[in-house]
Image (tube, rainbow, N blue to C red):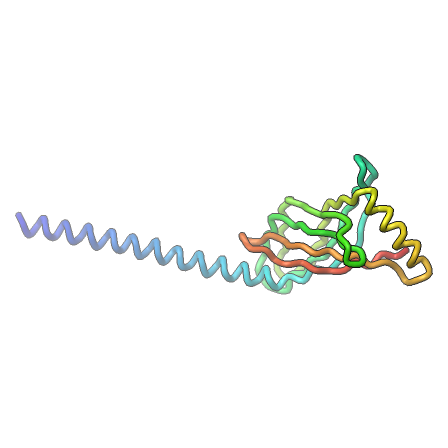
Length: 164
């Protein structure tokens, strides 16, 4: 009887260790997949495309900042949000933020529209900058922020050239 109990005890102990190894192996595979996707997200190429005016309301100018995101990898990248600041001549003039999920398919290009707000006082500064560059080629604004992918921040720093 004692030998049967010993066999059952060791069998249960072996099975629990086997289950633990399976769980540990599964976590290892999940970590490798997450690392691979996060690494692919770091390879995204983000270019400033343009802006689209929406409206004037509540003491601000509302428009969309349009970014073109290029995925040079074969992995689909899920972005959970994009946010950042809009700069003109190294001065922050507004913020842009979107929590709308976007999937950038592998080996594809996707345009993303990010709601942006600029206060009226900053709009006056922009007007002066436009007036000062009216004889030049145009006006450049910068978007500096990050996209959230797989729990990691992917930095974005791009310039958008606006025709005046």
